[in-house]
Length: 137
Image (cartoon, rainbow, N blue to C red; front, side):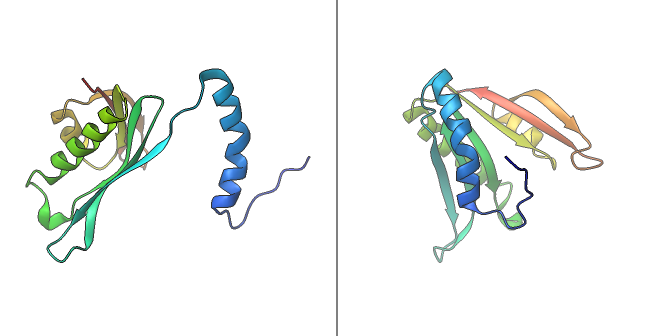
């Protein structure tokens, strides 16, 4: 065996690295049921201008990306994107959801019923990354 830094990692390398971990995890808990979840936000011309990207696995929804254009904020679109994703997550059998956020969105998620369960200070420097979760009832 040898250790080698990958100068140009790609999806195939990620899959190869993930394979033994997935096999081990599945041996302990069974299959995760991993499914990507995406909700597109489109403008009048049908172009994607934002949306939500995440996945469901082990009965949880994880929101990885949530984006609403600056000129469309404060109109309830972020809330509606989250509600759409949570509805789909429930349909997939999820019982809870989690998200991590940095730049001022913590209050947004708290207003949606998410609660902080951890923080990582200075990630990046001068900011705190917050981890939040919510029960999907």
